[in-house]
Structure formats: C-alpha cells, structure tokens
Length: 419
Ligand code: AMP
Image (cartoon, rainbow, N blue to C red; front, side):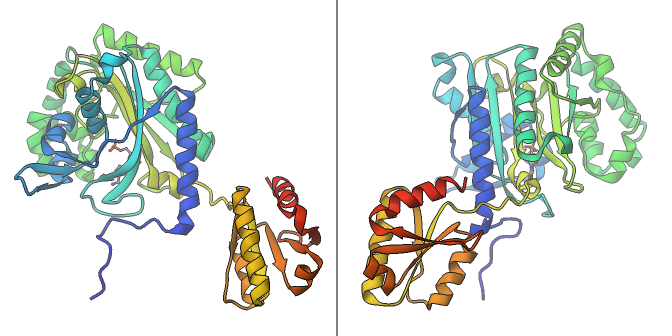
C-alpha cells in the first residue's frame, strides 16, 4: 500500500518555495525595522505548558492538541501555538534580566487537530511576534502597526481590515463575565453542549464558539466596552489614538475575544478579502499575566501570529525569474568539458548556473526555457574553436557572441540589467 501524508499535513513542493522564501524574507526585513530578533524554540514541549499558558477550556487545549506520552512517561505536546513556547524560553534563559525589553519573533510549524479545509490544516505555519516589558498603549499600537505593515507589504493595504477590541483586566472582566453569564443562561437551550458547560466556567469562550446556533445565540450579548474600568478605558482610547497617528486603519469590534484565554486589554484580528470563510490572516493581543502564570516575572507583553499558508494563498503568484545562466552544450566530450569548467567559473563568481547533461540539444533548450533562466549560453564546436560563447536572451530571443576570456564579466553585466 502506498504511504501518504497525514490528513491536514501538507508537503511544500519546490514550485511553491519561492513564495515561502519571499514571505520569510519580507517578514525578517519588516520585523528588523522594528528592532525584533529571531528565536527558535523546539516544536515539542511539556503538555503542562499549554494547559497553563493557553487555558484548559479553550478549543485548542480541549480538542486540538497532539499530545502523547514519550518513552520516559512524560506527557508532551506538539506546539499548537508559539507564544507559550517563546515565553517559556524567555523565562528559562532569564532574557528579561539581561534586557528588560524583549522583542522576539519566530517562524515555524504549529499543530492542531482541526477539520481540514482550505486555509485550515493540522500542520500549519505561523509567524509569531512577542514584545515584552513595555506597559504602554504606544507599544500596543506599534505592535499592531507592525502586523499591519507586514500584511500590507505582502498583500496590499486595500485587501485588509483590522478589528480591535479591549478585553479589560482582572478588575473589570469579572463584572462583564457575570453579565454575560446571566445573558447566556437565558439562551442556554440554543447553546451547544460545550458552551452550556463553558457558560458557567468561562463564558467568554462562548463568544468564540464556531457552532452556528451559538453564534446566533450570542447576538445582542452585553459588550465588554461598557464594563471597562477607568484604567482600561483610558488605555484603550490611547491605543486607538496612536493607531490613527500611525496611519493604521481599523474598526472596533466589541465581540472580538480570540480563541486563547490569556489576553488582557488590547486584542485584534486582521482579515483579508479573497480567502472565503477562513479569512483571518493574523490575530493577537496583550497578555499582562501570562509570564507570571508561566512562572516568570510580573511583566506584561503583547504579541500576534500570522497564518503563513493563508498569506501564501493570497500572495500574488509572482514569477521569479531565476537570476543566472543555463548552459546548453553540444554532446561532444570536448564541448561538455568546457561547459563544465564554464559553469564552475560562473558559480565561483556567485552566478547561478545549471546544465542538463545527456540530453539532446533541443531537450536542453526546452529545459532552459522551462527553468525560466533569463540567459542561455550555447556552446558548440564552433564556439570552442573561436574561443567564444553564444548568449541568448530568453526574453527577446536575441543572440550575442561573447569572448570566452571576458565571459564571466560580460554575463554579470547582462544579468545586472535583468533586475
Ligand atoms: P491563533 O493562533 O488561533 O490566534 O491564530 C492566528 C492565525 O493563525 C490565524 O489568524 C490564522 O491565520 C492562522 N491559523 C490558525 N489556525 C490555523 C490552521 N489550523 N490552519 C491554518 N492557519 C491557521
């Protein structure tokens, strides 16, 4: 029997890689402008980290984790998200003692046992950013602006919309939870089984339930904004004013709670047109208690995650002509040897070069065309005798003769003109 990949886990094939590379490079470039550094925690962590770090009543922890016992009897989990992992690393290595402000990002695979569909997979990749140690609405606004900047650079601002909300704090959330609970009790017959339980233990989760009848039932629910304490209210206004100062367009969504338990105050989500129902490309928010919940210092932070597959689906299929030369050689031993040394010389000069040996002249030309090299170098017995090369511009089909002695120099100049 043929062995296939596990459902919801995808191979990323060579023809998709240029877009992934572009996505990764753009992320690194944009985040570096904001002073962020990369960190790479492992994909496997102790299960306890996610119970404590995400909240044991979230869908992620209740239903979606890949958890198993390793050979030492320890319960381990393939990470379903990166924030808890990055914070664990920050605490374990005392990074905040070395520098009380940490701005970190990580890229990599996450695992959630979800129902696979377009834009929703069981192994998917996230770009994750965390900013720790600045308790200021300006830091929140700048973090949201960084997410918006990356999304705008990749997808264009016109296709984006950013929704913002405040989830309040330990002081004001309990009052809201009580009001929400009373509201939900009056509609409990319309709630799913999970929500009937969560309504008592963690009513905010009901606002995030994906079941249609639950979505209907929460229409008209009390909104957190009216329960915010003076501190949270002032803070939220300052975040919104700073977003305006930074030129970020946003709308307020009082029902936005996000799927993880640890958020306090600012939360946000970026959606993009063109993805159908799975249209959220990024989400995140502030978490003032998470570091201390995980055993670290009493320092707040704010972060977000982008779903990379969703960005890839949306990024225009940009054709990346490879910068380099394809060498087509007539099938004579002397010509092929000269072709080999030319290729090696080109590579030493940092020019990408490739050939296809053992193929007919026509088949080599076809390959040069398919591989999208802008220049093709033709080497035959005539060229060898005259110590020249024939260079074909693949876009215009023009051919030039170039002296072999200055070929590398000339090819570099020709390729520079192809930028
Ligand atoms: P979350 O970690 O749930 O806050 O999600 C952050 C972002 O990750 C979402 O906005 C999606 O773009 C992406 N994402 C979450 N779950 C999945 C999934 N199962 N498959 C693909 N992308 C996902």
